[in-house]
Amino acid sequence: MSKAVWTPAQQAEYRAKVAKLNDAFRRSLHGGKVFITAGVAGLQSDVQALALRKVATYTDFDEGDNPWGERDFGAFAISGQKFFWKIDYYDQSMDKGSEDPSDPGKTTRVLTLMLAEEY
Image (cartoon, rainbow, N blue to C red; front, side, top):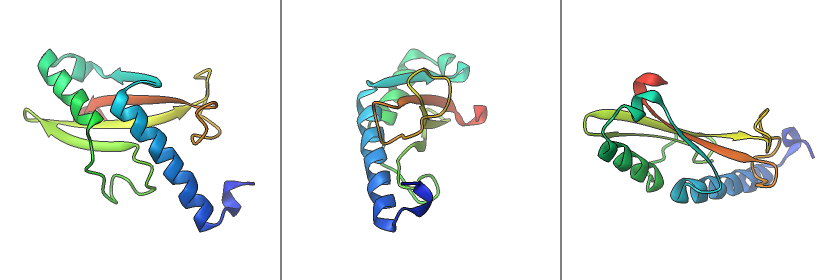
């Protein structure tokens, strides 16, 4: 069934499944790929570690950053630096976007941690 004709309940179920998969990946940093940008890589290693820990424990989702309820973006500050993180969904070969981010068999999750100024 095309997502365009899903009922609100089906949409909510889909988004809840994607959010659960995103949370599991973000908390463990396993089951996908994790990238840090050049700006983050240039910070002291203890600040990098704190930022990755903040991503893993992030719970400050709001309507502005999380309009679809999939918990795939966040923003926070550490040591005077503002950070963004986001999760993107690719197919298994990483050639194009995933056709179904709710299916881990069809999706490679990619988390990117960046300085806000690099966005």
